[in-house]
Image (cartoon, rainbow, N blue to C red; front, side):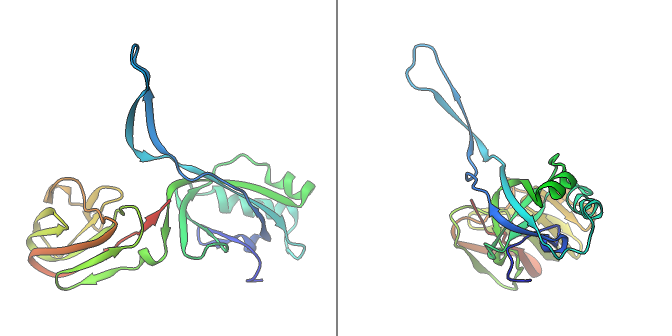
Length: 240
C-alpha cells in the first residue's frame, strides 16, 4: 500500500480514504506580484513591485481504490470532513517529493459523492502559499554560543526563534540587531507572522529593531549580548 502514489493533508494520507494519485496536474510556479502603470507620453510601463509572491493552485486527480471498505455516501462524508471541516493553511505534500511540503487550503465546491459514484475518481485543487518548505528546515537548531546557519536555498527564510534567557538581550543576525527588554525565562519570535510572544502572552512591546530576523541565502552569522542560556532556531528553509 505504501508504494501507491498519495498525498498528505492535515496529517492524513489520501490512501486512508481510498484515493490514490493518478495524475498530478501541471501548475505554474508562483509569480511575483507586480503592477504595471502606463504613463501618457512615456514609452514603457512603470513597474511597481508589491514585495510578495501570489498563491498558486495545486491540482490532483485521484482514482478510488477497489478495496475501500466504505459505501459512496459514507466515503464522501469522510472526505468532506477531512478536507473542509477546518479551514486554514495546513501542510500538503505528496509521495512524488519527500523533501518539501507546501502550506495549502481546500475550499472547492466539487461534488465529491457524485464524482466518486459516476467516475470512480476525484479531481481536487488546493490553494497554496507560494513557497514550498523543506522538511529539513523544520528541525530546530540549538546554539549555546555564537555560530552560523547556512541557507542552501535561493530565497530568504522567515525563521522561528526562541531565546531562553533573562533580562535585556540583543540578538544579531548578520548585520541586523534586535533588542529584547526584561525577558523572563524566554521569548519567542516568529518572523513569518511578524510577532513576538511567550506562549499565549504578546511580547511585541519588549522588542525593538527594524522588522524581524531574516535568514539570507548563504551563511548567516548568529550572535547575542546578554544573559542567554540557549537560542533555538527553526530556519524554515524555502524555495519556489
